[in-house]
Image (cartoon, rainbow, N blue to C red; front, side, top):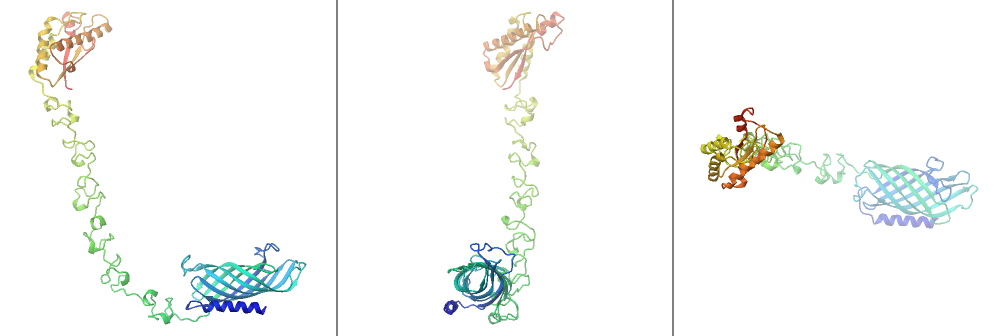
Length: 470
């Protein structure tokens, strides 16, 4: 036993001797313990509720590095399971502790610091009793391994909880040891101003300050609450990184083109109230978003909506379409694709002689009753119409045939169509282009005279000529 003990002590002090210097390297642990057999023996490994195997453990910790500590510990307690086995249990071990709060995995100053450990130790089993007598009294080597959590309460004290599995490497029981205890520093360092920097390292031991300034407080020359080290304008009080920002727009006054009016960085601190990407000073409509000098232009015709007579349809005439460019907007233009005059509702001007010729032709186009053959009295007027159409190519004619009410209605409808087409054929024969002439019949519809008289029926047997523009 003494041989094992000397080996453990030698190993511990060898580790301690090569440890890095640290202000507070030595700590003591005092813990309450509870020992439990492993499942391999009596299946009581996790039987936390029974505290019949309670005892104590005392440990001495030595700082090695920010990742590792060494712990030398001694514990005493019981190991029993019902009436099967009972013995006194004394442990002596050396553990290497890996701290997760090492700055790599968890912050070093974390209040909750988990750790794991692995070591070597000796266990003394004494006063062995029970019906299970396979194990004799004596000293056996084991390998303790486990994990724990340290809860930092103050700078010099912590609460610890551990779970260690003592794995026997000889013919002896393996068991769990659970513990809860306190850990406290053996150092006596003084920190008069309570800033976490010990007096001997504190350039201002009686005035709290940060470690990066050697324990002295940072100055705030302009008194704006921003320390000079962080203050972009240390001699001028301000709220934006220590600099003035009069309009509170997040742009310091020295870089703000409009320091008294809140704005955006895009325009050097000047406002764009409607958010259309044109700053207010250049925006003709600063409160309404738009694309035309800052004003709305829904149809994109270059005329702002407030001045546009047709705000949703692009156009050049006060914002309205004028497809033929005759100065009459399409919606008011009877001939929107052909330039004309306002007096003719946007259609080309028709000479008076043409109008008169058409009126005369309508009166003179005559047919015998039941016939689609033009009377010779119709030729002169139709010849004049043909000549005028060849001289004036801007318009066409729609020919509409009609009959009197004599005879069958269906027959009259067919006759009226033949009469219209007969008139069209005559004009084509006189040199008028086919594309300028359309013809259709409407039978007895729309009489212009009384069908009860001979003269009225003759007047109703007619072809009307209507000027159209393509």
